[in-house]
Amino acid sequence: MSTHLVSLQLNQQQLELIDRSVSLGHATSRDALIRRALAEFDQPAPPKPTPEPPDLAGLSDQRELLLEHVMEPGTGKALEVMAGQVLRIEQVEGGQCVDFNCFNLHDYKEFMHTGRTRTVHGLLPTTGHFLWSAPPRERAMMYLLADTVRCNDVMFPRCSAYLYESAYGFSAHTNCHDIQAEAQREYGLTPDDVHDSFNLFMCTEVHGGRGHIKRQHSRPGDHVEMLALMDLLAVPNVCGADIMRTSNFSLKPIKLQVWRASEVDMARVPALPTYATQRTPADFKVSRVKADRALHRDAGYQPQFTNVPLQVSRIDIALSDDEHTRLKQAGLDEYYGDKNGDALRDLLFSWWEARFMA
Image (cartoon, rainbow, N blue to C red; front, side):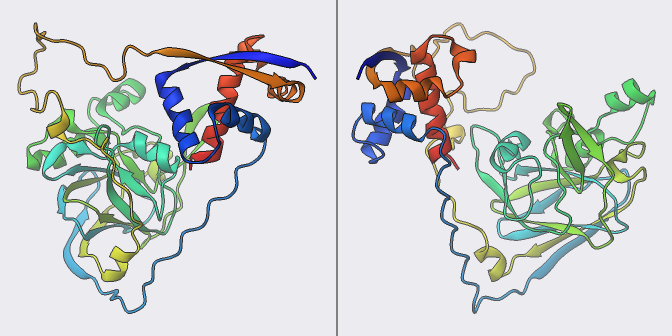
């Protein structure tokens, strides 16, 4: 039997992941892990065990109503929602999109991030999902307890005055950015502090490589309930799009309620680990919010990038005929041609991702 020598170029970060996998018992050596990847590359990963549901027996399901407010078309409302409180956003007439932002009440630079939420939960977050804050915090801010429509969007940006002027010719028109900015102005925040929204009751789909908005089917009483996991400034607004399908071409009121969560509500939230990389301002090299708008170079600046310069090492592995055949059958030649080491590196980490990532 002949052998085929393949050389992989791997930096220290890639080697760290390989060595950690070996230390966790996924293989006995680097070579063995690579060979396991070759053997299992086209096999489905084993299903992850379903977590046990929380034991709700004996817990109270009684909530206390703390606040109720109806947002009229063209308006929004900034609400303090403390950890352990539930924000309920409810359709009054049905068919109305609601844009939603939130901020850490004690540090407004930590805010809900649609990109991280989208990466973790997909394009349509719903019951059982979290709303995550932006890097470098990346903490769970809210937990979705209930969602009767299950049609929420984290793909489309908020509508804006520019959109209505450039596309429709309006010099002034209700729009989510300006409504949001005006609502959160009550707490000293500026139009620059508005960020992309969690678009509640907004039905979207992707086809032809583009996102598309569909008419929605929410009815009176349909609602989303979100449990605050930290003290928040929550800012929902009635989406201002009356000439789009977003809210079925009309603007309607929306009811807001804040409740003190019940014991059952609290027990339903899955436990999440914490990580050292969930950084706070105390970890920043520049920890203070910049107070002026002009930019000025720091003459004493010295770059301190993570793990730079990257150090590349070479690993040689002798593949058997069968292993070499499996490598060539992986369909990676269109990307790497005859560079078998590059193809094997791709296969290794693609296998690792499929096998060990949720």
